[in-house]
Length: 505
Image (cartoon, rainbow, N blue to C red; front, side, top):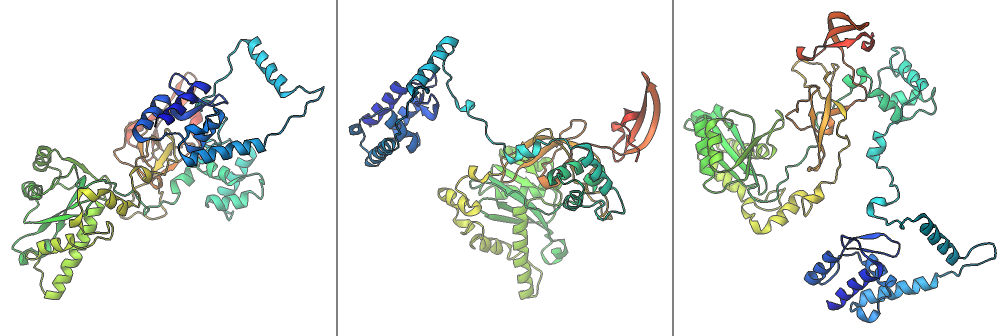
């Protein structure tokens, strides 16, 4: 241990260090994770240094550390090999009368520094050579197209007689490049992102992979739901509903039969479940049986945080999947016994479920305990920690202009516009999920109370708005202006716009 500390201090003495204690190598660059305080404290506590092995051995070689100080056979052998390789690859410089020797050149460079009275530069991690742009940065850094390419695309896309009129980006590109050979698919997509017709009618994906519910420990998050069993109430002593609750981590479940779904009954039933265990969070849908004073009073008393799903179709996936399992077993029982009475065997079905090996956690829910939480987490997510799950990075930057998916009505046709006329702005890209999601704001700057996946929003380059009607006309400072109402916008968005901004189709 003392020998390691001597090596660290000798390296710092030979090569120097900055105000943060970082050791500098012979090239004048400070090495990451080389703080003297950090290295010394880590060596004292763990018995080894934090530096990468390769960097550490190179530093030992630069400092001409005596090999007798090194106890570790592996490090000593690698240091000897490094010195041997450096000796083999030494090439003596050829010095002629017309060319300065390396020694003279270095002295000349030193004199230049002295004459200019400037200290030699100290490279930091922020002064590294320019890095290559990431794919995301390259996509965002778009160059404007020339007028000829724009005319080619416009004449093809908006010509009803053309086979590629109002088609996809790929089809348009394949035809347009015959007239504009230097045209790229990226340029075609960029041009289409500014065309109102394309952005409103672009196909949407309503079914896509969504983020998993990430929980790390038992009782971190529960989900609750109400199962409607009204059609069988006459055979079940008047019980019409079943309150089901599932722990998202262990998949352990509870169920309580109810005669009504009043606020008082639901709160009392949930309180009986809390006698056994208690969660940090409880998630439900937006049903009135959960959004009421009685339920809120109970969870506030128990210091439980309650939140709801904002998606009307996709709500509480874990408990809804459990409901399906419960009802499947229940109806198989109905078929085997020729009855519709479940009230007598409800608890038996729940106990059997909790004692059955679950396909997700690879064990029985009843066997999950605090000592094996890490093992269960790896079984669920295939990773040993939460951090390694979050590998995806946002594609859309903050401030990007987007449209959101249009919510179809019952009798809407598939050829109607799929995206909203309203334009939104990316306010925040959330990275604490397996897939990135986004928070957006309206044209008035109001935050939308919903999280959006990349499939639910579409980036556009030039926001265009369809005018529903012209309400007024005026002339101001010699400029003609119209007071207009925009299509699919409320009256609060009515505004005066210059005549030059009106595009006649």
